[in-house]
Length: 385
Ligand code: P1T
Image (tube, rainbow, N blue to C red; front, side):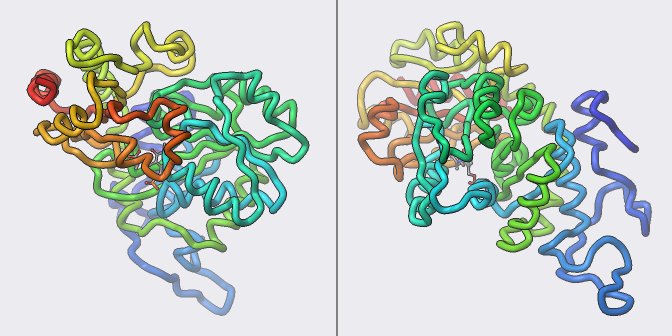
């Protein structure tokens, strides 16, 4: 069935980019587990495909599906979220400058500041919630703004539309990492972003069983340049991974509703907990960008960050005691996870930068899953108690 942007998200999640398999009528896109495609004669291909690094029917169905969910025309899948990020950075040349949000996934920070810095691409980190600081940091060498919102792990919300206006006025490309929000809650392209990035490892995959990334754009020129990088660098996902993700996107809307419901209840509960110093959740009125989150997102997501009373000893004790919340890196799966950013996901961020952002020893990040919420609350209570 052809679905357009006017269909409901759930309808698009299930049908966009999908069609019965032309050779058998199989309703599910088959796993075209093949590296190559036979040609009738040199250069005369039978269908649309010649080699799976360039394109593969299972991957093409996934790329079309996620592009549709983001309200974009073109999707490109990668072997991981950081591979997708790297592809965007490869649009740049030595001497170019990037504005990077000051609070981003530790691996994103590492990629910009330690890998691409060696190639002469300069990264300046800016608090993207401060629009004057964004404007001031731009100069004639600035070619890319990399914005993550909500941020990982302190859940700051930046105004995508306002940053997009600044980017446009200065002819700078704006890429938004939409991993924490998902296309169900936020669509950066509709707010003026040029590129949307996801680690599909997280909510899009949703079952903690695959690593992947995706880029979506409406700009045909950017798409062609990124596709060339995807083909040339070859950091493409395996076909089985694409199939797993296609299965996952069909339930993204249902999972996200439950992630949001559970997280809202847990944030409220922890907000009144004697062992918790502070709760950061975009849905709480106390969140500094709560009004912006209400405007820009259509739900507040499944991530909660808390400062517990005490220090490393108390954090460690809590993370050792939870049963349902598994102590592990990553997020966005159906099962709840708990982690300690300073030791785990953001260990590669320099200690003084972590301190500036408030990534302290008593900061704990929760990825709230879709289990029964009362069980999750009881688990946190016993671990804190
Ligand atoms: O792990 P990978 O699929 O390469 O995705 C990288 C990535 C990109 N963007 C954001 C916002 C992310 O959170 C991540 C990965 N994050 C974790 C592994 C984590 O636990 O925070």
